Length: 428
Image (cartoon, rainbow, N blue to C red; front, side):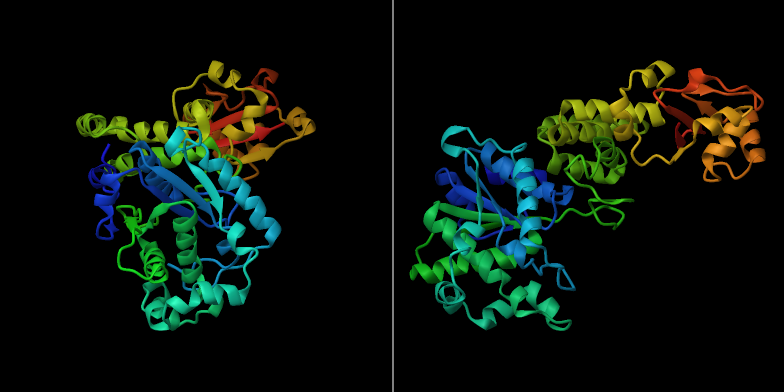
């Protein structure tokens, strides 16, 4: 597989330094991407750069994933208008471990000569003094060179601390250290990282003291949505790769809700499907867009790779229960420990056994349990029932005066559906 050609047809190539393609065609090349541990999990915005490493390894090259234990203490100013909140060392260590664990799902660490490796820049910075760093890196790059970077220029008017200003030097030294000690020849990242990455190639050139050097840079476009909104955000904020922060169901739904005009790009960037497979899916989708063939294909591929087959199966089951044609039997098949995962994000309320006993009919139950959130009054609840718009545990209710049935209880839960998309989970 030709790595550069693969990126080109997938729309994943933004820029690269001269000689990069020739180097990759000449021999197995080690390349790296850095991930700052500013959170306990990576998010789907990071997934595009992770896929660069995936394709690099698939093309026979050697990927390195750098977890920025040192640079994470400062924070990258690129794309930011204000300084970051700084994290404690304990928080950074915890975040580093979470990221390490997630990266093992995408890269092969036991594939022989091109096995992936994970490194932490804290390992080479922890014993280095400030004076050592100035001598090792600071003397080789001028302030004029550093100020010319976009990530710096955009912050000069609002203020940029010396600590953040030094970030590109730290990242540049990372590249130099990996170049000298691990034989890494390529650094990759998002297009907003071009300035930081080329600082590394320039530092290597100047420290090597010769024009003949072998360090290269490559970036991928930042992912944007067709409607102009930020990619990777949902109503609840970032879409994380950690199931404890974004459940498999929420993760699956994010991709399922992608706009048609975004799906072609998302398929190419985030899945490993071939060009022929993607083009065939696009053809099928164009013939029957209401079936959302592309959205389902993306959601399946990415959810399985991030959360496993079991996570995908649970997400599909949850989607069928909430929005599909699931039956009471489907609901009964859900294990008690799966309820919280499936119904995360669904409006929930708790009712006591006493309140349940005091509800003389279904209208009473809806009124008490919704607490005014779904049904503002008993009258509204009664009208919804008579209009055939209410289901209890996937079974339509037609009589507002229907007596309550303990058979409705499904492992302490009652699922109330108002129409197709308003759901209320009652925990008894």
